[in-house]
Amino acid sequence: GDNEIPEQKIEGDWQTPATINDTWGYKSYDHNWKSAGNLIQKLVTIISRGGNYLLNVGPTAKGIIPEPSVRSLKGVGEWLKVNGESIYGTIASPIDILPAAPYQCTAKRGKYYIHIFAWPWDRKFTVSGVGKEVKRIYLLADPSHGELEFRREGEDVVISVPDKAPDSIDTVVVLEINK
Image (cartoon, rainbow, N blue to C red; front, side, top):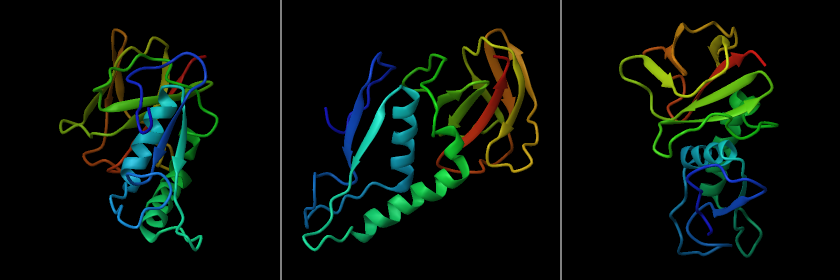
């Protein structure tokens, strides 16, 4: 249904049609605007499960996009300037992720993009089910791509992350893997 995201990957083409508030089109009484953070996390979750995000933005009768919509969309745009590599041209997660996990994954050839929604208090973040050899790990937002320390625990990768999340909405960690 509308505004719904499947709990796991679905084979074949699919999309989630959604609204930037609670109604389709413009309704003068609907002021329940979704934040940029909400839109970003939905975008990432949908992409990580192999879908397309169809977002409705309703202009007023005068053709004006309401300011709260503009603010949220600009926030998404600012996030994409830094993290767009982890969205554009990616495929669904090649690793299985539980619906309640604090992260999602998108991928390109040789890279897994781990989207962390909840930063670990103990500076250790575990990505489960990474079967491939990991060459290096870094924060996508770090222009120098300074390497993060990590260790393998079977199929899991335990990453040492900074004390504070570089992005409170979605920090992207890149795992470079052997193809």
